[in-house]
Image 1: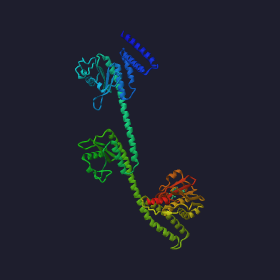
Image 2: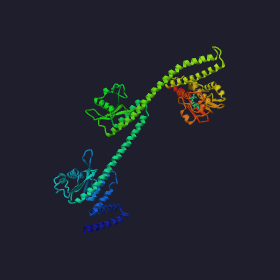
Image 3: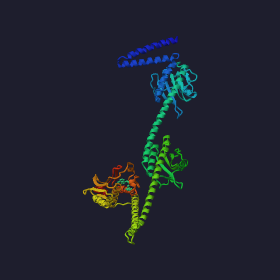
Image 4: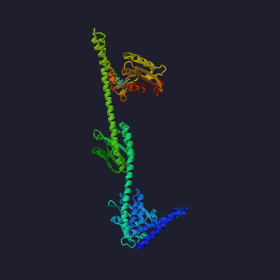
Length: 613
Ligand code: ADP
């Protein structure tokens, strides 16, 4: 009987809805459209309510509103959706949704809505705390048809004061825990809610809790991801800065800069343990740290260095909070990175500092290795310098006595003896060239090679060197062509060193060009510089070999090169000398197509500028 009447009402309402839709399709004045929208909404609400009160209709309604849930991952939006759906389902006047704050254990009001789906103002937020606390405590929902007369709540202040009557409240549960409550009420009317409504609300609360947890999780994940991305960006900047320095002081300064910037610390220290066990500041070695550190910090530093793990100290009695992180180089604690500030350090700082420390460790290790390589280089240069010096004297004497013997100054010699003495003489020449190159390199590396630069006429220099090398060109029936005009500006260079560079390039062209080939030497002005080129029609240089050119002891593996005498030091010395004289050197070549070696030198004008500065 009831069922029939409701269905009839539903039929009527649905035909009203259809009629309103037709009107809605017509052009309407703004006011009329607003009134129509309201009428359409009211009709929808009434249909919803009829659905809800129909046997089986509640479930249908629950299903319909549940579908709305989960369409958003924005927590506030989800909470409002839940609230509106609950009010729509139960026909309540107002609804509140509270979530337990995991940090404080308190219930925070997160949504407060009325029947019109409006958010309530703080003044309108009036609910029964007793009902809510009972629900949270027991984990079970409560329905009161008339709270004013309900023996469980009647005497409670909020019930009396806010004249609450119909109340429905259900717990929100996620993973077996109560995470909050949904509360709806009606102040004016009693008997609005029934136990069936509570069942419905319980079912809905279960689904709402899942949607709320999803939104919370998403927010947390989203936030955590954004934080991680920001941290990675920072760390990539840290990496970039740290890896571009090989100097220990710069590395420690950068580490301190980043530690201060990212942890909000007011002071940062890098402390290491010295051989005698005392602590010292890394970048201010003159200042012993022990004296300047309070006992608590000294203990924390020693503990962090021994255990190889971070130590945190809370602020006490005017002593700031500290975070001490060991910096491990090759598995050994190299030093401790300490930050301090008045407020305790948060998780972000605790997570950032060890990451910074591992990067600082790598950069410190590089700086240390670089220092060690520099030291080794110095030691090598010193060794070469001593050896070359000591070899010069006996070689000069071998050369001198060989010449005397060859010239027959101490008695006649036969042809074979003369030949052998010639071989000795040649090999001593080779050794002496090597010793001379090695000695130059050692002087250049240690900065002890001093130039005697002066203003030179380059064309004269080229002619002179060419003349001394002419016999070698004749031996190989090669043509040597020179194209250096006399109107070139003077260059500022050391004549002996310039001769050394020219000799190396021109004799290489002669060595690595087959018989009857051609070598061309030219010079021309190029901006502020003079560019000298030595071009040959020789064997050329492969791309792979070009990468090694100008390196120490570099010689191509090709048999045409190996059959020539050489140590692979000439170009290296030439490159350093040209750089010292303020120019650059390079080569353009292709296998079988000859090579062009070039270098530049500053002209008169530039040299004067430099002299004056
Ligand atoms: P060296 O001539 O004593 O080997 P250099 O340092 O003068 O030493 O030259 C290094 C290497 O560069 C040579 O061994 C050779 O492989 C290559 N090279 C130099 N000049 C030429 C050139 N003009 N043509 C071809 N290869 C050359």
